[in-house]
Image (cartoon, rainbow, N blue to C red; front, side, top):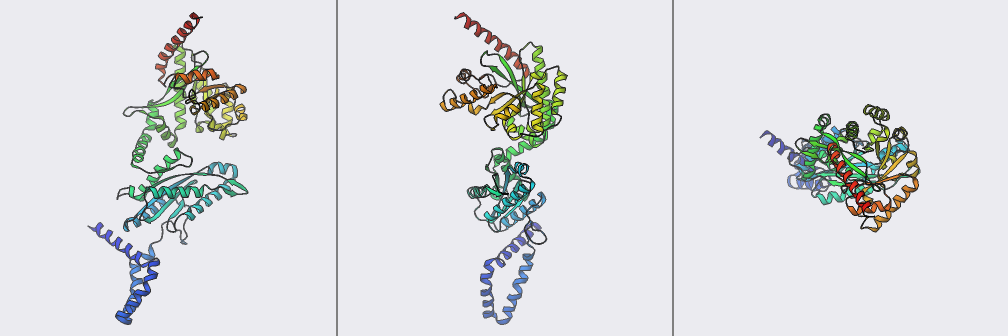
Length: 515
């Protein structure tokens, strides 16, 4: 009952503040004073003149400063998470007391780190200030825009009648267009992109706090960044469920790595000219005791957020080398196992030393290990520790595979410098090549370039016999995909490889008998 009384008092104070502040007060105050004088004379005029200010003070009118203001009353440009939550609570309370709605929009600027590396910290700071200025110039007077991180901005919208999904999406689009405009800094044009995630207060329950509002917008922003660049996402209940699952998986990730729940499954790679197995790619799989197989796209994001990609790399490498040795002991001829290395792993100064030690421990030569590096990593790391590690691994004897070729704009000079042995052609260039003439010509051009550079080629995502046959005709050296075999545990690969060897031998006998 006490809480209900306090709520009513707060609503009354808010109503009085709204009535006694703003342009409406300036419009009606002279009329109120004149009316009091006509009806009650000078005593009534004095009562109104003294009573209204007193009522405004009692309603807390002079104490209602915005939580994001500094001591001088100016709006802060950068605030921490605690201040952000306080500010969000302030906006939520205003909205609820007036039976209106508010919203939180989070903005992630993409490319600021690269800008700082190329142009220096001062250039990046100038771009941050310009971005904040552009946001504020696009918003309404009572909206708030502040920076809450190196590349992240928080926007809280003043209470309004209509802040539904459509209006928030339109506002986010306008804001995005404003801050993605090219900027001239130090006589150079700078181009950045921005992802947006937002949540309106009407989509949350009545007990939601400012922290809940910001967290919901954060979930939407995470989804936007993963689908970026320049993506916009609105928070939904499905996102909340997915976010809860992500948090649950994050709590279990260390135990899963320690208990062997996360291990590599292996997808065979086949030579198009002989049909023989030319290698196998190690792909991380999480076999959860209750959930079953957790999709890689889901748990890899959890690992990255938890900063455990390096540990995953160690686990996958050890299991892959163990599998390779077991295949040798089973009498299989599998020349190489390929392992994906993340950007964070490639930044490890001791990476080459660690891989050399692991190879020696398993009694394997470096030529038996393939290092798969995304083309975007090579294109974006012409110098530094990443480049030195890749070059050193190539000199060691490991085979360097350039993964997802065609998506990262690596130069021909980079292919030579990084000692790339094989191009892994992205599946987007492989799909429907037996039915799409444009795809056919594009792939033929890539294969022709690789041939002239003396590089081997492997096509990913081969799903049909027609694609497999046409790739062989065009001169692609190796193929991999569901049309060949799905990823499988190392022990199942032994049975599959033996059956495959028998099929190839039978096909060769059939070919000789028909001549």
